[in-house]
Image 1: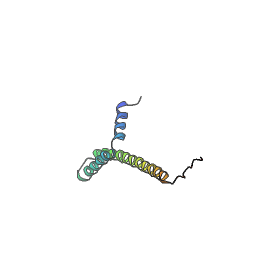
Image 2: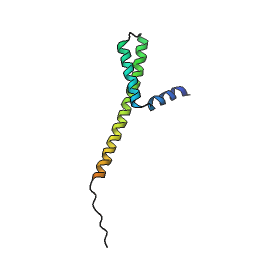
Image 3: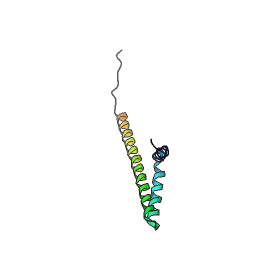
Length: 88
């Protein structure tokens, strides 16, 4: 049986905004670089950071795809369409 709290945590992590995930990642990097942390804590921070990197990459890929779709739509809308003359 799946752990409901784990799936809820995964959902909230993936639904968080890009900027929030990036800020958390920056804080983790600063903590890992500045503090003299025990190995277990470093590993936990590294794992959390890896998850945040994946979230950020997914968000950026989604944004890139949306931009490509918008550009494609804009390009097709800007094409000249032949004028349809009604035969009278």
